[in-house]
Amino acid sequence: MLGLKLPTDPRWVNIVEKNIEEILTDHAFCEQKATSTAISLIVSFPEYTELVEEMIALVKEEISHFKMVHDKIVDRGWVLGRDRKDQYVVELVKFFPKGGSRTTQLVHRLLYAALIEARSCERFRLLSEELQDKELAEFYRKLMVSEANHYTMFLGFARQYGKKQEVDAKWQQLLDYEAQIMAKLGTSETIHG
Ligand SMILES: [Fe+2]
Ligand SMILES: [Fe+2]
Image (cartoon, rainbow, N blue to C red; front, top):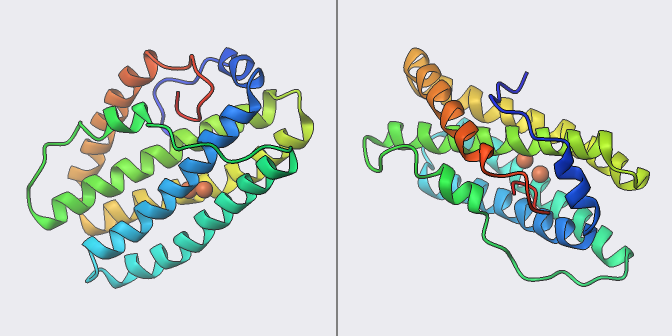
């Protein structure tokens, strides 16, 4: 349903499970980055009224996810650590050439956002199914549903604002590229690692 070409090896959960503090810290900053992305889309593309309205709602939702993760960290007696570089996203956003028309740039950013949401959703599903810690598993099940909605929203906007056929072709190319990145990952206790 997410269109991803390479499923995560479930053994990634065994790595995560050994360091819950680390995954929660990384996850908190994923939610912060999702919030920042939504704000940045408003700043870059203010004339797309429908997008702006959805991004306002998304900022609220993503920052509430950040709070949920932060609460989990505090509940467990930890303190939020420093942000980590998301190597997956760094690699992903190299795919489309820079520049092009405003619409092209918008479509590319929407496709990146859709893919990051889709992969996050897949990772959350795996955590919800495989984690021994049942409280945390339930937490990830709820978040998985939200991220699936974000994935469809971003992809929907890309198809709405771009030329549908072109967008669909780019989406397929991006999915192939993402699978190559993913083939080298799945070995660290980060949401996209
Ligand atoms: Fe989120
Ligand atoms: Fe999201």
